[in-house]
Image (cartoon, rainbow, N blue to C red; front, side, top):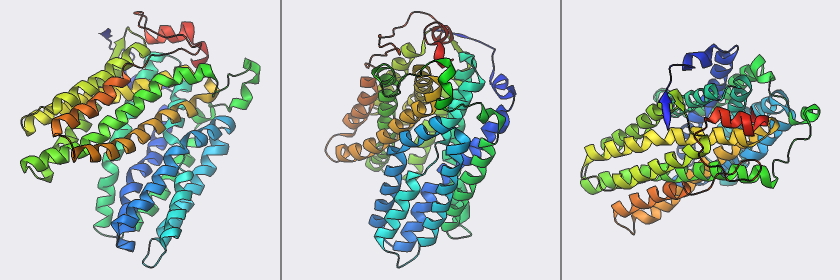
Length: 423
């Protein structure tokens, strides 16, 4: 299926003009997403004294952020990052500061919920926009695969380092400082991002007139082409989010303590990082739509096997093996989404995958909470894995609507020969 390749390398990705500056700026802004959840949750619980109220406000914040993501991405596609992304980020930062200001004793639940809903609705799609910039900078699909891999691994590290940063802040100051820091990070990072020459290369969809009429992003051709990556992204989100609670239940059954849970979840993240970097370093000879089911099935089978683990060591190994397939599955889903649409619709295509992952994670956490109380733990692990494995059966369609199967052709060749508008 693949052959090792020493070039193009990850270093070649970062040597592209303006790539390092643009990527660094995007990571500064995206670090806000790693800090805001914990900082806001702590601020709400301390100010209201109620976990129920804090949970409700966080749910409202997350819902408007996740489910309005494709709409916000469409604004970036239509008007460009400078005209759409920067005002969005600045408004989001202002609303986060307002949310920090109202997180004090005596504030009504409705005020907290409305402010949180408005802030979540303005969350700037920095991740999808950065991936669209990578696609503009790197017409070589092999280089783009490496760029998406390093982007995914870096994003995962942000969600590890963000809570650690908030933990350091709350040791010496109020958690609302963490919310304000999140606002500063997203404002500064987005400003640096949109002023980069690389970001300016993203042309709004309205300027594509000279290249012929762009297809309708909601039309059947592009919609069917996005079906496979969106479904797989959602399924992987369900399976991965289920692991958190399943590992807690596993540790509780055996009296292992919270420290064991941390080790298992760290193994999942480590496996995902290693898998993502390895996937980006391989010169695949099969097309992306043929690889995606393999990665999804790998997640599912490893999680099902994790349910049979007799002890902590075996569970750590099984979960780490599942992690090896997580980042490759999501990276490949983003690649397919990029291939499936015209250049003027790349941000919203990536946002659909982002939305699918986040929605899947929310659904997975809720569903597994019900299953754990009713079914044996091995069955719960198998059910979580079955979701990802079932997604491997979703057929992949090209933009023309035809089912795409493995032909032995490389992804870059496939893209150049049959999907030129995405290159």
